[in-house]
Image (cartoon, rainbow, N blue to C red; front, side, top):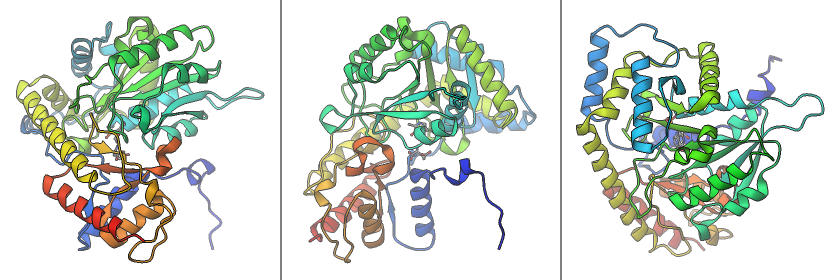
Amino acid sequence: MSNLTLSRRVSTLKPSITVALNSRAKALKASGVDILGFAAGEPDFDTPQPIKDAAIKAMLDGQTKYTPTLGDMKTRECIANKLVNENGIAGLTGEHIAIGVGGKHVLYSSIQCLFDFPEDGEEPWEMLLPTPAWVSYRPICELSGGVVREINAGPESDFRITAQQLKDTITPRSRLLILNSPSNPCGTMYSEADLRALAQVIHEAREIAPNLVVLSDEIYEKIVYGETKHFSIGSVPEIADRVITLNGMSKAFAMTGWRIGYVAMPGEFGKQLIKGIGTLQGQMTTNITSFNFAAIREALTNPEVAQTVDMMRRAFASRAKLIMNRLSEIPGVTCPTPTGAFYVFPDVSALFGKTSAGGTKIIDSPSLSEAMLDEAHIAFVPGDDFGGISGNHLRISFACSDEQINAGMDRFKSFVEGLS
Ligand code: PMP
Ligand code: GLU
């Protein structure tokens, strides 16, 4: 027997349930089981052709060598222009942009640059996390020595926290507030008025929490289909120098496998942060794949691509309607209407305490998800790891065809009808 062990940091790290469940569903499908997967946080569409062509051309043209660590300046400037012109975030130049290997990577790097492990007698830095929240924010914060303070919201407010809740949570050790609108896992959004109210609280907290910064994860910004328009909190002048805006190519352009994400922060501290990310990346991954820079520029500037993005948006809008109709037929399952991203997050707690047709006692969201995978062959993500009240919920991704949504909801309905 070997007495070798992994670091405590890694051996206690919680695996990502979204990644794990999606991989499991895909493996079961590959082994011949008729699984209908609703776990994947990725568009089912292919990457638009002009983006692929741009990458192929760049590769053929010989763009196959190391590039500057944070990306070539032309591409960083192209991203800065997008954020200034589309999102109204003033004062950004290429120097304020870092490009990394996916939104997850630049999130990790940003947090590494902001958090420290506490030294003797010091209180740890806090991440303020409105929940339900994507499963990766907490572990990445904890890996960096921070502690998470959840701010819980529920379906009655479309999973939005209030300005008062934020105000009540801020302390002198507050380092980072995470905002994610449209939301994974909720599919709901903050309005401009909501975000302005939160911005006002951040502005007024300058004295109490001088180190507080906001990270606004806007990776689903292009996938919105309700009355609420996407709004970037980094465009509010009073707090603009305290806002990191995170985005990437994965969701808007159906490019999850390409692994491209970026962060932006204006001002002097913004430049420092981006430089810090460069130092970190220089010891980790160096640049992203060299021929992807041309693809980023193509995605952000080609009007034909913008039309395809809008086509995908409309498809998600119609699927959101379909899945809400189908869920309303299932007794004991309730959920706010999604207006963004491609998730619904229904409350399924009315099913707890029952027994499935296959004899499984449903005690919580994981046992429900497990029984549905085994017996109904549908893969939904259990809520627990999304924090706060999420244990009463399941996450269903509707980034799939109408046929699959209908077939999956048929199975879900008969599974629930078979409970006793
Ligand atoms: N933020 C949120 C809210 C997400 O759902 C995802 C999906 N993985 C990401 C960031 C990161 O995506 P990626 O690493 O593919 O850019
Ligand atoms: N963000 C997606 C999801 O939530 C992809 C998997 C992941 O990175 O978590 O399913």
